[in-house]
Amino acid sequence: MTEKTNVGYIGLGNIGKPSAKHLVGDAFNAHVYDVYQPAMDELVADGAIGCASVAELAAACEHIGICVRDDAQVEGLLYGEGGILANASAGTLVAIHSTVTQANLLKWSSEAAAAGIRLLDAPITGGAHKAVDGTLCYMVGGSEEDVAAVTPVFNTSAEKVIHAGELGCGIALKLCNNFMQYTEFVIMAEATRLAEASGLSPEVMRDVGLSNGVVNEQMYMFVTGRNGYLRGEPSPDVDAYFATMGALADKDLDCALATAAEKGVVLPTAEYIRERIHRVFVGKDESRPPAIEE
Image (spheres, helix red, strand yellow):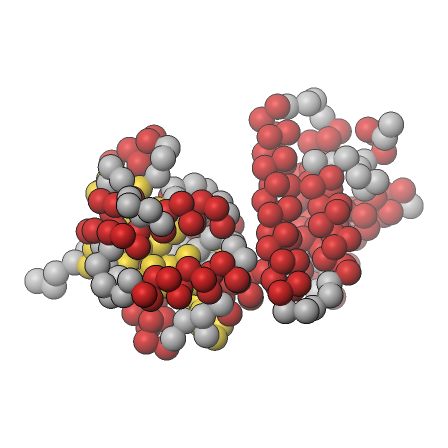
């Protein structure tokens, strides 16, 4: 019988929890860690091995995936006496799934290499529903050898694994993808406002847009869902949901703009979208439905 590979996953949120769940099976011993105990308990009930600390997980695993919010949280997991770099064995592969700045990613990789640890970038796109379905897309930056080594792990939750190029190319691809996505959010919201003001239904705009490839179904569902919510009864839970999405958009666009500045690239549209994106998510911009205009 083939011995199972010990794989660790840190960060059991909307993407991380279902992704980690897919690791439970015949090929891997799935070790998990999160500061939120109920998420840990759910994974343990599904067959994962719960770890009491980052250090415990790092010492046990040959491959570690990190799926947390931002650069600061990644650094908190990597460094210090209880961090991954101090506790993982030489040769351990660490995959950063979080959307972070390319500069920090390259710094972490260099410092990990000094400890004998191989770090690569592997951000994810697809959303929570695709994480549940196991149909995510991974955008990976690193050597051919390292990407080949991690692909079987990623395949448990992936429809597609794209080797974007050398280290840092995965996160660059994710930042470009997110920039385009958030731009489309803003455009779709404003176009829907114009359509409704002109006596058109959003469904008619959707039908034409889908026929010529202009409309992305996810964007249409977001804007119509946002508008439907804004026309209904206020809900603190929904308010919090859209505000959280807006905060993530702020963070992702900040990462894109920081990376662009490091490379001497000017992105005026990204700067404009960054100024507006949070207000678009929470319906406080000019694209809000007429029923709630002030």
